[in-house]
Structures are given as C-alpha cells and as structure tokens.
Image (tube, rainbow, N blue to C red):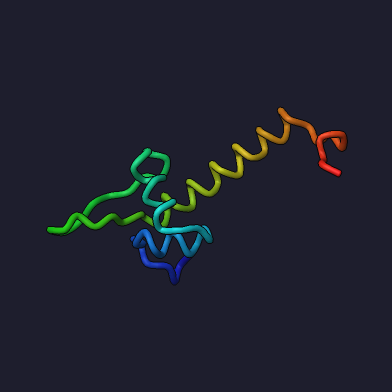
Length: 78
C-alpha cells in the first residue's frame, strides 16, 4: 500500500470494500472500523493501516465462522 495515502475518506474506504459510504459510516459509528474526525466540519478519515487491520480481522472472523458452521449440502436450496 505504498502509493495509498495514509488517510482515506469514507468514500475511498467504500470503494476499497466495494460497498456504500453509508455502510462505511455505520462501521465507523459502531466502532468496528477505527477512524478520526478532522477539520472544522468534522470529516471522518480512516487510516490505511487501520483499514488493512479491519480487512484481516474480517478474514479471521470468516474463517472462524466457516470452521464453526461446516458446509452442509442439505442446507443449499434446490
């Protein structure tokens, strides 16, 4: 991530995660994704390193979910 700026806007984060800015805002407000407010208008910024940590944490959670909920072909709708 050398060419990535240190801080990203919520729109930038939404693009990286392929989701909406509203969803990223919800992640920030719930405390799932660490962010800071800057400037007089209090615009949110997410540090690139924190975003990468969040992505790794989501991978870990997905692995745990899969391990705890093994795939069962009977669960697949016909």
